[in-house]
Image (cartoon, rainbow, N blue to C red; front, side, top):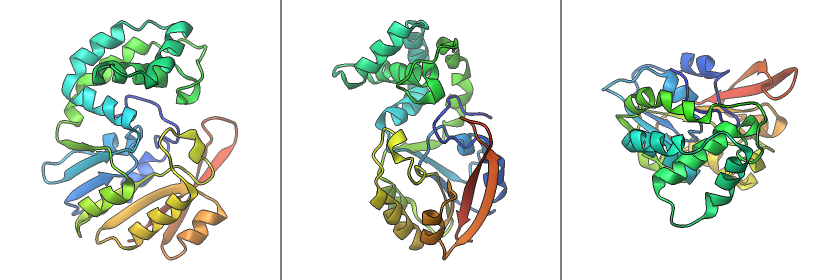
Length: 246
């Protein structure tokens, strides 16, 4: 199944490449930088595999939790938000407002994702988006998330909690030099910190990154596969890397 949202750096184009590289016999699957969850939603769920979705963006995680536990109430809240520039900027202004319920926050966050240009949550897109129609996907998303553990943790803490020999971590961190595009803070030092924690894994990992010298040097001890896809935001192609420890 597809994701219910767009997301900067979403892995729709690379999902099949990533899924094909997943080893058999895993007992737990952990998405460390979940985002739109394209890879998670592309996997076939199994009662034999513990699945974990994590993201450090608290507003994004709140959306997932509200769809999982309160989808009807979230749909009702979205029905109150018509497509309009004024509503978009009202939602943007309310991001930092105290006193909103989790469901109200989730509805406004979803509205900003759906109605913004390139899902950047800051610039109103002039093409009609049909924001309220997003709730049509909620039943399928809710069912897919039924047995998924949803976390909102720093990546290092999360990895140390769930690391086992039978664990597979899929990591899709902010790409090098694009960190400012995301609401959740990810600094230059965090690239080194991620490499350090992955180097000590008991389990296995698949890591997606942009193809640049910094990343290649940082992960030179691991298996690196170069891929090329169409650039979603401009013409031409974009080079990416898939890095594994197996």
